[in-house]
Length: 220
Image 1 (cartoon, helix red, strand yellow):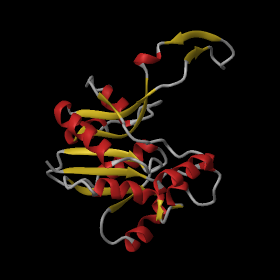
Image 2: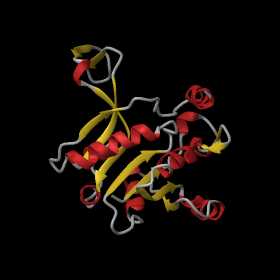
Image 3: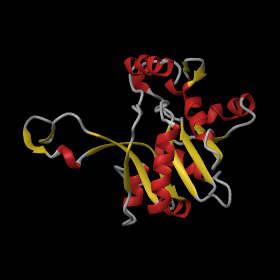
Image 4: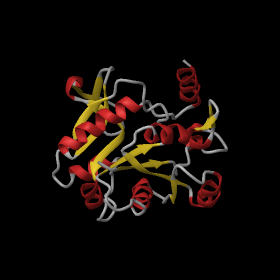
């Protein structure tokens, strides 16, 4: 089985509050995005790794990192960034993993678990159980309408791994308004997507507090 990974690192990270996009900040000796590259590169079946970056960084990163991964130019929406990454996927690739560079803690074991499930079902995504009570609120958030059953709810993460032809078909149309992740596009094709709970920390770095926590975890 030959696989490819698309690591999305084209976001601006405005909420993080840094002049440098967070995915390129030094995280314990390596740019944040490289931790994800290393995780996928540690698995032999991943024959191709594509990092989607801001268009003005493609040339400089390609020259700096001459081996290990390809660079694709990001778009003005995540949909187009992933689509640009898909355009670089080589022939004979069986499965494609899409992963956010802002999740640098992804473990090799979790990737393998999701890949194994995808190989059996064609589509599988990383999820985590919801620990807090979840409420449905009115428009504007003024009133609680209902308490939801958290036992059947999950936070969705990345990587999300799909059969190649399936993901390409999902991205072959126009952008879907309100689409927030790749699995939603696949769901629109009436395909069942498997949920795989991650066993290791895999949170998205959104704030500086998240960044500091990731540094501590990587040191341990």
